[in-house]
Every structure is written in C-alpha cells, then in structure tokens.
Image (cartoon, rainbow, N blue to C red; front, side, top):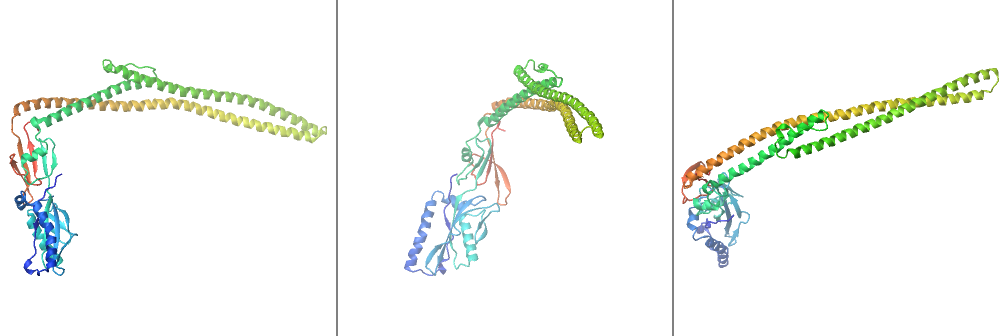
Length: 438
C-alpha cells in the first residue's frame, strides 16, 4: 500500500513573549528548524493546495512531531515521547499522551496542529505554545464492490476519481462476465455434486441387496433391477460380492473353531466319565478289602497296620474320584459356554447386518434427496445461464451505474449517483453496477 503525505503544518509559539536568544542559541534555533523546513519543503508542491483543503476523516493516520522552545536553555527540545503515528479513531478523535482525546474529523492538518499545540500548552503548563508538525502518513481507505474485477479495500489518494478508483480494482467486469463465471462455477459444482450423489445412491442400493441376502443366509445375490442398466453396476456388484464372501468365510471360520473346541470338550467329558467309573470301582474294591481286614483284625488273625494301609489307600482313591468329578463339572461348563459362544457369533453377525441395513436405508434416503436437490440446482443454473446470455445480448452497450455511499459531517451515510470524474474521499464506498452483472 502506498503512503501519501500532505504539506507539513506548524503551530508556532508566540514569539513576542520569547526572550531574544544569544548568538549560540540562534544557531541552535536555525539548526533545529532547518530539518523541519527541509522536510516541509519536500512534502510541499503540487499537493500543497490539496493538503491545505483536505479535512481529516476516521481511519486517517497522521504523523506527529513536537518541538518546544526552552528560553532558559536558549534551545529547542524535541518531545520524542509524543512523536509518532496516530490514527483518527471511530469517534473522530486522536488520542495523544498527556494531551488526551483531540477532535480531528473535519479539520485540516494545520487546524489540528493548532488544537494540539494549545491543548499541550495548557496541560503541560508551558509558557509558549510548542511547535507542532502534523502530516498525513496514510489516508483512510476506500471500498469498491459490484461489477469490478477485484472488489475490496484500496488506499486513497488526494486526486482520486471514480474512474481511477475502478482502475485500482482492475476495471469493470465487462458484459457481466463475473456473473457468467459464477453461473459456470455453480453449474460445475452442481454437476459434480449430482454425480457424487448418484454414485453414492447406486453403491448403497447394491449394498442393501447384499445385506438382505446375508440376512437370508444366502451365498450370492442379484443386481437390483434399478441398476441393471447403470454404468459401473457390474463393478459395484463384484465389490459387494467379494465382501459378502469374505464375511461368510470369516463367519464360517469362527463357527468351525467353536465346533472344534466343542468336540474337544465333549471328548474330555467322555474320557472323564470313563475314568470316574474306573475310579468308583477301585473305591468299591478298597471298601470290600477294608471290611474283610477289619474282621480278621477283630479275630486277631492279622495286624492292624494292614487295616491302616488299606484305609489310607481307600482315602486316596476317594480323593482322586472327587478330583475327576470336579474336572467333569468344569468340562461340562466349558462345553455349555462354547455352545453359547457359537450362538453369539451367529447372533452378532446377524445384529451387525441388521444395523448396517438400517444405516444403509437412511443413507439411501439422504442420497436420493441429495440427487433431487442437485438436479434442481443444475436446472436452475442452466436457466440462469440462458437468461444471462439474453441479458448480455440486450444490454451489452448499457453504461455502468455508479453509486457512492459517504458519511456527512453528522456521521450519517448519504448515497448519490456519481460519474467517472467524481472526486473520491477517504472511506467512500463505491458501488458499480453494469447491466447484466447482477
């Protein structure tokens, strides 16, 4: 963004009340003022008249410099703490340290410098008014919209006219090319959206057919009648059929694993039952031997140690029997759990298929709606394109209509029609309308 300057303005002190400086002080005065004079001379010239008459508006940026004559020292002193750039805020003032809010809108740089000098003298209790330099470092922007190549915000120049402002925005959108381009973009977008919706719809219909076949326990399914003549239907069917076969293999594998584990549990149960029968027979033999030995011990025909050994063996046999019976219970429980797991595999798959089918049906409804909306938008853009072509043929030579929205001194926005040579002011909003562009 380029920066524009107005002529430098000064608020000078009351020299009648200033003591006559010494020769050294005079040289200091000339040295201090020389830079300001040279700077003022550089910014003066062709833009002097414009700067003299230009009145500040909000968003203007000014550059402030303050120099004070100190009679006690016989020299000029710069107030660097106040030097810098300030923006005219939305309330129309500039906020300056020590000085505070100073109204700026509607003032020239010279008038604003005088106001700041007076306020600073009063606030700081100075004997004389300080020298104040106020320059415009950046004007408030202008705004262009409508039938221009690049609508937006642009910097202001003091000699800016409507035609120059439009040239900053790249010129007119000739023959409504902006609207035509927008219609073409809308058509392309609508066509793409319609194509995506149709592809989604066809994919979902094929998926629905596959899911319904899976729920029925089938290993294959037919292409839906609505898709038999659709391009790409064979590929969609092949994809869904491959998925169907994969899921069937996965399900069969889980069921086979459960069945194998069930057979293992069943064999274990059979083995345990045989062991238990054998162990029960062993316990029965020990019980008979114990009864015989007990009789012999009572008659004194055998020692009691033999009875003790048989009793110990009988206890061990009964303990082993209990262990086998416990293992049998565990095996039967495992077999029951295995049967439940096998049923869960099938039920989980059926539940998953049902959930997927419900989701697919909802997505089909959404895709159908999207297709109808996209088709309606495509029809609308085609109709607008025909109307645009007719408008361009009828109004190709119509002159542009230019309106300016500008704030007056009361802060109210006024709108008026402008010509290409109408001068522009900062913060103007320029609306350009070429027939057929809107």
